[in-house]
Length: 261
Ligand code: DGL
Image 1 (cartoon, rainbow, N blue to C red):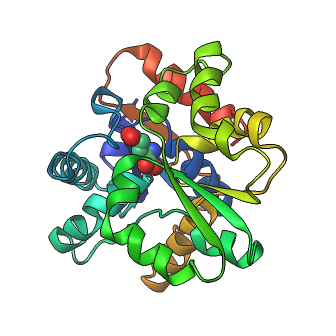
Image 2: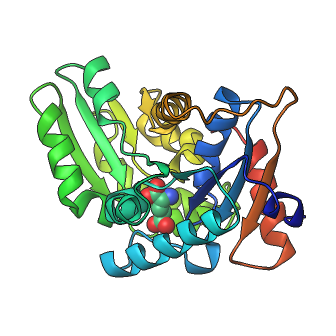
């Protein structure tokens, strides 16, 4: 399945710790429908958000190495956690490669909900890093940002069943204290757009913001700027690969690709 793409160089490598990045991939493919994408989920090592920064840097670098060895023309880090811990390191190793990351969509949320209360859900690592503090400090006068680390949530989504009672209970624990008191939510982990419905069941029909659209726009801008947009006329392909080699894993990725996010 992957041999076909290994011999090519006209594709974009996209990675995440697991299924979450598929919410970004969908947006990339919708914006750039002629491009080929190779999505690599590091599900054998998920979740990233509760590991050490060094571990996430090491794992992310080796995923970027692997995608570039296969011939990727650009890399998308479809993970807020890996972007905050490793984007600079990857860019330093590959200064001539287009490397685009994703960050919590604090800016669009603060613009749209000026003076409102915005819950920022993300992994513990994303919220602890300096990169988030800097981002939040640019917008915290515009809106009141409430960071909410959700340990265990990405790992639970990674299991695939999104209707389970245990997931509901976990979300109750994280979100119930904010029900009725926030004006919007930033989904600051790429796994979370798959559970919008479950979040809305607790917080109500509040606007939710994620970084996928911004990442897709930035990728298009960078590829255009570098003259790297594909010249192909036909529709591009989406190919999945995973560090968890069971074939059920790829079936799970394909199922997530078909889910609303
Ligand atoms: N999907 C990732 C993110 O956007 C990380 C989830 C995890 O592995 O902890 O942060």
